[in-house]
Length: 204
Image (cartoon, helix red, strand yellow):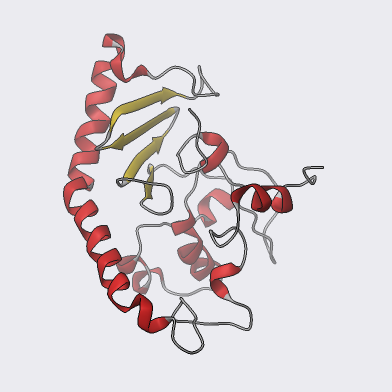
């Protein structure tokens, strides 16, 4: 079954567009991460990357913009709406590896199988590739600890939830002129109505 809350290409591969002085028009197919945005903007603004990189796992995409390649893997995490346990993944070259404590591992060859219909994790011919990604994932993520931290955060917020609903209720610490929690695609409305109103062209 295909879910929006997943790392399938239809959900995870969202276009990133950057424009500005000195940036030539072009299209780059290499996968990147949302975490790359801050270091990229800092790099374009001439801010020292030495002060940026300690607090982000992203990397500047300026080399990609100038015709180079992003060589490091794209790391993915999801632990929000619709998930029962943290979901993590690694996208590198033609491979995509997905791991979740509640589900079997997934391994896709996106060159041979761009629609991700064949999970190679159980294929003996790809056991070496699977093990390589599994070792890297285990070194990167402690899924039990990840899960515990998410549930602890949820429990803390439930403690103050009723208090926050007294008076003017805003669920986010920073509140711009519009309700931040109800902008874009959020979970404050029926999913059918949400998808119909946000799809282009419109559902009708």
